[in-house]
Image (cartoon, rainbow, N blue to C red; front, side, top):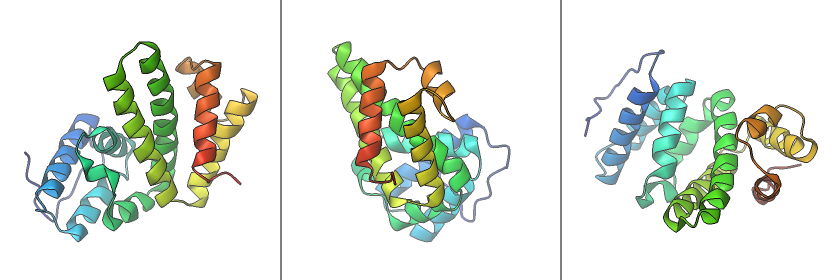
Length: 182
């Protein structure tokens, strides 16, 4: 475990790999109750200000097998709210990708991987609801529009991953379940 010294200052050019390592350390310290909420919020605020930092945090936090991420603390929610332009699109994509991946894993009869994708989907939905903001709602709506029309801001994302009709329908249903669509 890489102990985090507070105050910690992360570089603006944080790599994805370093963000994963910092995030893993955060989770380990959270599990051991060795990190004050204020320190957690400060480090996470720095992490999510960059795309690499936010991606590293989400890939670690959302997929972690421990139950830590099942009930995000107020510090986590507050930190995520500090960078809506970085956090919102990544969270919306995490929701879409985990939803589609769960379907693909079930088709391949990989129950373990499907459960992991279900966990990421559940946690992504919960975080989107918790950090609700106009920016989050705009990204949820934009993805819904792309799913409905095949065009728009998220069309290239959906096409790049090759999501089929069933996957797109289930992603759309999951977006509706967030209660963030107007």
